[in-house]
Amino acid sequence: MVRERNRDVKAWLIQPAIAPYRVPLFQEIGSTPGIDLTVVVQAETLAGHPWKIDINQLPFQVLRVPAMRWQRNFESEAFISPAIIREFIRHRPDVVICSGFTMSTMLLFLPMLLFGTPFIIWNEGTCSTDGNISPIKLRIRRALARRASGFLVAGSLSRQYIEGLLPRPENGLFHLAYNCIDNAHFMRDMSNEDDRAHLNQLKQRFAPRNLLHVGKLGERKGIKQLLEAYRRLVHDRGMQDVGLILLGDGPLRQYICDFAEQHKLDKIHVGGFVPQDQIPAYYALADVFVLLSIADPNPLVIFEALATGLPIVCSSRAGNAVDFIVNGSNGYQVDPLDTDAVVDKMALALTTIDRTTSTCVSRKLVMKATYQDVAKVFADAVIIAGRAGGQSLGSSVSG
Image (cartoon, one colour):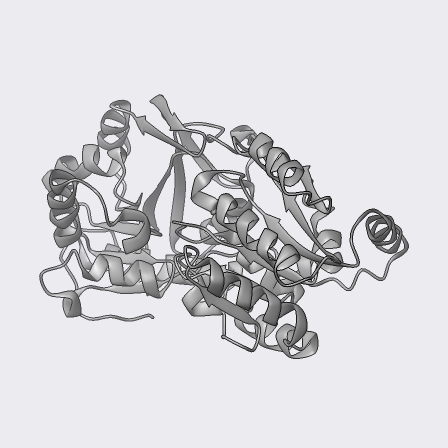
């Protein structure tokens, strides 16, 4: 592939669907000089998510390709789109950013090799989330990784996973691109009249102290482990003044209600999905944020909690925990299956972590993940791959 001098790099970024929090990122990438971005999308919704995006109203170029989809469970589904091969041949992008090791990546593998099109794998998976795949899938991923021109990784653990696929990890070209949110939305001080009124209403409804969980109410999010740890915190540690607020929905909702009734835990509250403009008030109300995911690539709720300064007790299996949680300063990393340790750390977070210190540490860390900075990482990765013309590059430039 020889690119004409002074012509923008025509980049494809493939997504199963576009989540609302990705819109500012893709807009930033698309507005970067030298980049002609098209986001290739296969659906308007994803399993287990309440949002739906109107792709005709997005502030960047979108190409919708028809796809067959099947839902594996509440939280997971797969897409297959043979039409993406036809569209690839018709549009001939200079660089393709593949969303992980999906079916689209596999379908385009041979056409990209045939036309000499460099491709970048955007990976959020970790050994915890992707470590138990079949031998055939593992061989396919290794083949894809060996041919990739670079990797956009969402953190240290996702980089480690990719390194495990490469015969010579030191030759991989890694670009560190954290997930990100609207930090300012969660950093606001709740001082305006509407925010204060909402917060005061919540204080009247809930316990004097509260643990907060935001996310899907499914097995993978460690909901059962959280409930058992909370039960021990209340009944064994005597913290009867502590409540548990769970925002989100999922298949374990009734299980939570039954558990609360069985163990006489009257301070458990299941709030369902809450609009984004109302969530900061729950963070302001809470004393500790808890996420005990059994497997979770890069949960955005961690960034929300960081932006608010709330102390965090987070599963060490969450992909961004190792990069953003400093044990004893802004929270604790825990093994979600070690209930004794979880209870200990929740108690410590409630009683010993200084909120001012937690806020200072967390907000400094979360500012590493902004739309502008991450968009620049994406743009740099595209430019480098475009210049390479499909040839593998040999040294790490980021992360």
